[in-house]
Length: 466
Image (cartoon, rainbow, N blue to C red):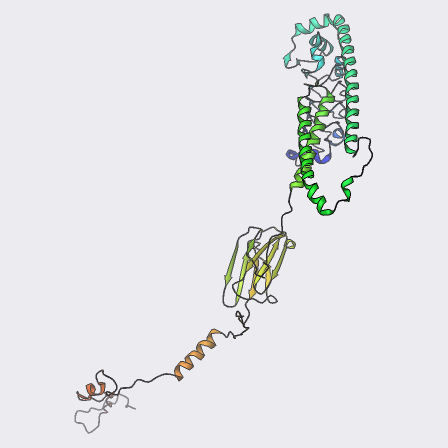
């Protein structure tokens, strides 16, 4: 069953930013509401109120809605028009398909001087003789009744015949009230019988007493062997019983009354609860995801389904996880191990096997201030662990290693031999000796002019050569 709560009104006030005190339009249709309450205290500024297709049995708690202009109560369980005198601005009232049999209750609408439209079709009173004439004569402010405009001539004739029509309406109302009283008694008696039948079904015996089973002394193995098919048979019979009861309920003829509507709703609720119980039993607990196998091998897992990149250089391994930018860091848990890294993001594991061994104590994890990504820096260790025997080999820097290799190469360098007796290729020394060996061209000494040279001319302007 539905109730009018503050949370329900706020959820239906999204167009007003979920603010209810200044709400002008509210729609609460198809909420299985049984009682009209709280709206006059929480939503004083309402102008339009939709409450169609519910189970409201009485018009109440709306008299303080002074600004209300349109009230829709179609498809409910209302049997009488009342408590609408305080709705001073009410201009349209829809009571289509209800159970209004007291047609004389429309006299309470005389105080609603702005009422222009009224809908009463689908009610028992709409089948009364002279129904339209009675309403037109009783409410002079009306302009439209059941979607049909009221003509001035129709109103004049209704006023003239009012004295004759009113007693006929009263007699029809009495007949309707007697029928309703009988239907209520039958519905109440039927409801009590159903309650007693349910109590009997809930008890183990027909007389409500517990009985012991003779076969209860069987061993546990025998009990398992014999009771398992019995349980299956009992479960199947329960399913058959529920399906048969459901078909019997829907195929059973009944009158359209407020009680039948409530009974239908209770039956549907009962079915819904049974289905929920069955679905809960069928639900299986999801096994936890395997992160490390029984052999101790770590697996690659990406349950959050986020992007990542791995940068492997000579000194460290950098993992960049595309964590959501506005996620709180308290929802992230990082665990760095020598051979793998694990990150829990909102309880979902992300695990990656590393290509090399790292130092967990020297690792660091930071959030990027621009992208919000999680950056994990993991420095590599200086030793490599090989399989089988634990042989350790020091990893020196590349510069030292290259220097050692060049020194070793220079020590073991082999010189070329040019002995013609040992080699078959031409003698290089003879080829060179065939030609006259010309000495290297040395730099010619500079010729310094001598004063004894007849061609020498001493120029005093020229400084002496050093």
